[in-house]
Image (cartoon, rainbow, N blue to C red; front, side):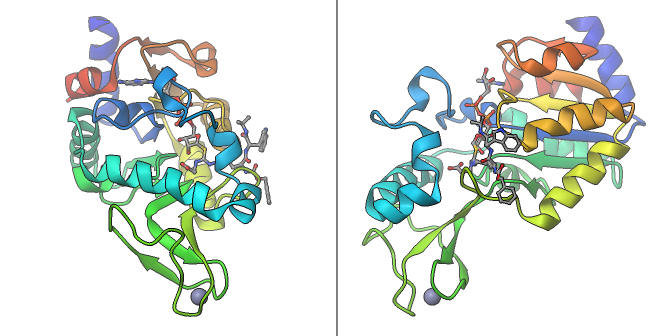
Length: 239
Ligand code: BV8
Ligand code: ZN
């Protein structure tokens, strides 16, 4: 691991770099991942709860899941992995892009300046009636489901299964992946598309790929470096 870290550390010194993160980077902060053993909530799976259909059918149930997650996130803090990425960004002005699938806001709280949020933000609410967007950090949020002054239900401003990633976020992420010389795949099972497709986009455009994950992922076969371990321990060693 040491020589891979050394090689990667030196390439980060000059290269255009993209860090692509998933729920695993927040695991050491205490935020449950999606597909880990403790990840499922009650007997439901994210693929069933994080959908417009589930919200239409039972907005309260979907909100109970999001409110439970917001309460957990509000009680945790960024970990050394989040902070190391913010430091790498600080040392590489203009040649570092953070692209995250996470909605927890921990990258922002760790000091990352412009995370590209592919799947939205759990602290933003959007009205299902008038499309007004508000920032709301109340945890717990009462009453559930929250309503907009216009009377319609407010929903979390996140991208559900079957919904498109916001145009501007996708454009930024795609462009960064085509320009990357080093592409870090951190704490993600690389299973949710189109986000997961960014790894192949970067590789095809000539990027050197590094995967940081305690477990194997589909991106391992595209990787020049596979760093088997927790992001909170590995990332600080890249500084
Ligand atoms: C769409 C937001 C169409 C909400 C989420 C092919 C092309 C396009 C779409 C599809 C396709 N095939 C299938 C689809 C449909 C679907 C999809 O991908 N399904 C999957 C399940 C197969 N995709 C969609 O529906 C997307 N939309 O395609 O729309 C369209 C197009 C145009 C117009 C209209 C419609 C939308 C997908 C977005 C869904 N929203 N989240 C919320 O958060 O509540 S997805 C959810 O999964 C989260 O965002 C999460 O980040 C993401 C990915 O999961 P991971 O982050 O990877 O987390 P996971 O738990 O899986 O893995 C954790 C990893 O960390 C593990 O590997 C673990 O080993 C590791 N780890 C653990 N501890 C640590 C660690 N690593 C490091 N350190 C540690 N300490
Ligand atoms: Zn409204």
